[in-house]
Amino acid sequence: MKITKLLSKETVLLTIHGKNKLDAINELVDVLDGAGKLSNREQYKAAILKREEQSTTGIGDGIAIPHAKDAAVREAAIAFGKSVAGVDYEALDGQPSHLFFMIAAPEGANNTHLEALSRLATILMKDDARQKLLKAATADEVLSIIDSYDHEEGEEEVSVADKQNFIVAVTACPTGIAHTYMAADSLKAKAKELGVDIKVETNGSGGAKNVLTQEEIDKAVAIIVAADTKVQMERFKGKHVLETAVADGIRKPEELINRALKQDAPVYQGGGGRADTSSEDTGKRSIGGTIYKHLMNGVSNMLPFVVGGGILIAISFMFGYNSSDPNDPSYNAFAAALNEIGGGNAFALMIPVLAGFIAMSIADRPGFAPGMVAGLMAASGGAGFLGGLIGGFLAGYIVVGLKKVFANIPASLEGIKTILLYPLLGVALTGFAMKYIVNTPVAAINTTITEWLSSLGTGNAVFLGIILGLMMAFDMGGPVNKSAYVFGTGLLASGVFDPMAAIMAAGMVPPLAIALATTIFKNRFTKLDRDAGKVNYIMGFSFITEGAIPFAAADPLRVIPSVMVGSAIAGAISMASGIGLRAPHGGVFVIPFVDGNWLIYLAGIVIGAIVSAVMIGLLKKPIND
Image (cartoon, rainbow, N blue to C red):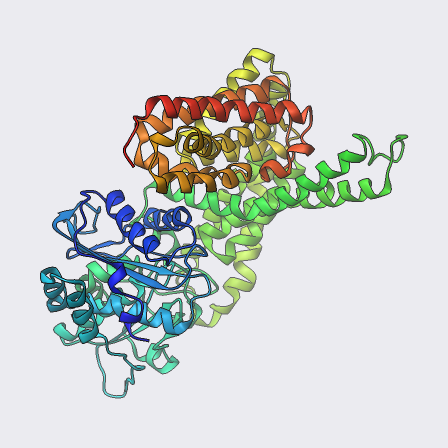
């Protein structure tokens, strides 16, 4: 498929008027929406912003390629935009961006579409193409320039027989549309300039292309893996592997190639581990960011157990609070089965899974078994959620240490590391540490916290509800929001359910407030904003706080304080009423299953949303739509 089948006159914007990233994104999304390419403007925009949170798509050299693959896209399309003055797009080189290609791919995008989208990324690596596009004065001229460079390329045929300084590389990004191919082209162009032979495998949305053969891997002096997502690593066992971000493949190809030629990279050990796990994140993330990443890996894998188990327990209470007790008159066999499945099994796996996946995030697969054991010991030893967190990190870094210790064992013993040494010593050392160092003091702390929360007076409970509410609305899905959420889910394992109820109530307020404000105060919002506001009814009732992010980003000084007030009110009402929630998600669908008066709980959410909506309406000025 030709690129110009996806880029049309209707999706060409010759002048971007905005000066910052959000302005440019809004204008390009409007172009796609106006051309009928989107079924839900705000949903697609949220997907674009989520991609930007991972890493900027302002790749430098004056180019930005915002892109997203989402169900809100009716059909694959490209929007072109140009800014002669330049836009502060937070580009990797710190320079203004002038050429913009917003790529919209539907969930079911076929390979033909994806290949066309990826070819666009490779065209933009050509300096002469960029210069011509900057000078283009009409939409027809833009289309003609793109069409002149649009040539399909076949698979690379590489003979390694006579190559001495041969490098292979793999590039991959989360969406597999743009950065994957731009990194590949950047590496190939720089290698050609340096006189170095290279083959690059691309792991894009359309599948892997130019797949490396074992012969090519064996011949290579080193492997470059420029990826922000997982790639198949076991094939590189025993080779020098340089792992880095896909953006480095675009911006630093010469540095990567020179390091590869010098074999300035650790030897990949195999067994599911990375070449150098201990340093993997240090170049890209702060210590806090690294800890947060590992924690979120554990929490995200734990949540299905908590959600499923919590809702099953809540449903069992519909038959009576003691309906699972055989000695109680209200006993019901079905309710007992629900309680056993939810509480006795799903909830029992919560802490081991949390610890196991934290350890796996740190040390890959060798860390999983020690992490699971640490979590189980924390749960059975009374250390609870807090003990599971500590155990997961402890297990992960113990295995990282073991990898360093056994890095230079004879090659004949290489195979026993993964199947014997890591699990044996990892489980043993973690187990001893949990039993004799961690469990006792952490169990005492856990008991103290649980007793304190259970004995909170009304005043202190309200204060806690306010704090949790403020945290949930402060960054709506960011680290502060997630910290409050993790606090609530952790207490579920200790049988404390009130904070989780306050957290969900507070998290539902921001999108509901936006929806109400755009409905009641129509003259404060554009037509596009009012249409997007309707979607926030669904997001709010579904406990998707992130629905309010686009509105908060567009007007943070008015929107964020407003929603924080409403969320604090909802959290305070929930805590003051002594309402508990056993499921950490579900929104309106689990409100009937809360412990306590669900009507009061619902009223608290509605009151908070109304207060925030009124504040937004009063603070924002009328506009001419």
